[in-house]
Length: 180
Image (tube, rainbow, N blue to C red; front, side, top):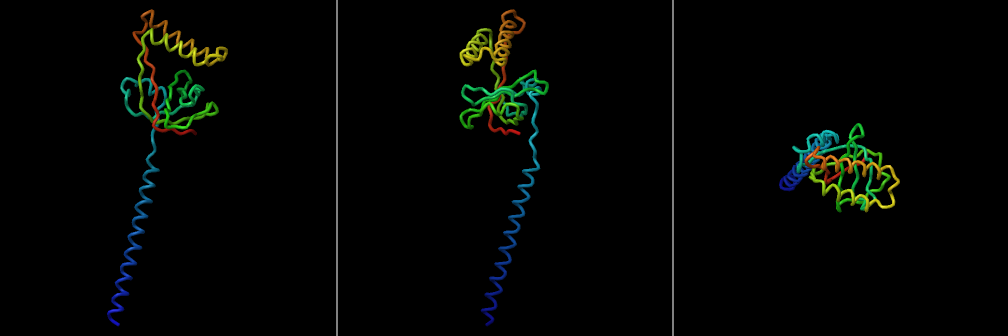
């Protein structure tokens, strides 16, 4: 009988210890989830990213902005605007993301990715203009097309007059993004 009671006590201790360990593990997991939720990513503005582009090139950046334009040619990139709407930053989604549609324009995007600079001389800017004209054939009467061509031509003129030695366009190769 003593032997049977001893076995029962032994199993009771194991059972209580197992429940206690499981509760502790669950509590630790809950705390880890709470800490993860408490760490909120800080997002920079488009202005801040562009102002510090030289220092941030090739680094991971967190940026947020209102989506102004979704490229219909490929549906894997969009542009977000600065707070005052005068500057834009291209977001490249790549093949790892599902395609986006123009309906997301106007939404706030939070993007984490690598800032990539593209330095252009006059020849590259002229090629950029031609590429825009080819990709947006049939859209020549839209305000977006007219604005983009005007901006490119302005950059080109600054380059050929020597006002600027080169032009740098920044984009973000997205690792992840979310819409609000």
